[in-house]
Amino acid sequence: MKDGIAVVTGASGGIGRATAGLIHERSRGRLRLALHCRSNRAGAEELGRRLPGSFVVAADLATTAGRQSLLEQVLAQGQPAVLVNNAGVDKPYEPGLLIREESFDQMVAINLKAPLFLMKSFGQAMTGAGGGVIVNVSSALARKALTGSAVYRATKAALEALTKQFAFELGRAGVRVNAVAPGFVETPMTAQVPENIRANIRSQTALGRFASPEAVAEAVWHLIENDHISGAVLALDGGMNL
Image (cartoon, rainbow, N blue to C red; front, side, top):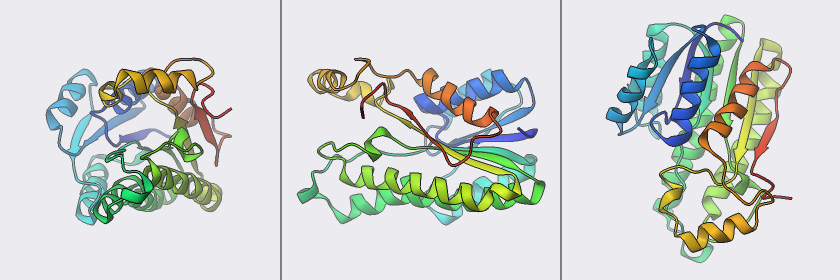
């Protein structure tokens, strides 16, 4: 793991907050946090106050200008060493026969196009500096059907394919690329799911419970720290896909 800046997209959400906090703790000052948010700047700034040396970047990663702004603001502060592509959306929930084109465009732009082009731009910066680490946040639903999640599933399955492709292409340049694939995680977003649906999901999971954001953060950190893992997709689904 090289010293430098660790970029966490979607840092104001549950998984993002836990991941940024753990990177700050475990890196012991070697990694300075770039906390990305799209609209919840107050939440990102509150997190930043708890992580000395960090800085907040507000940008819409669904746009070319937003992605370029993130890259430029990070490079103005130093060399990116870690990129965690965590920002994503899982709504709207639309069964296959009800999928709207605007829903497709939005989800693909945020869940797939954004991480792809961030891997490209930050990967270029990392290869130029001799190495780095990229961790993408996928989902157990990349391999499991759930009514209403067709497009979400497709974006995450494609993200896992891109993870392996970038790992293959960038490995000789010292850049490792991996992904974590959580099942359902206890976050404010999943707290909005009706309890009967939550209970049904838990009943289909070997451990019978959702993951904590901290468990996901630990998995991300493992992929950052272990220098011989690349092209891996680490399942963190509690046995949902057994």
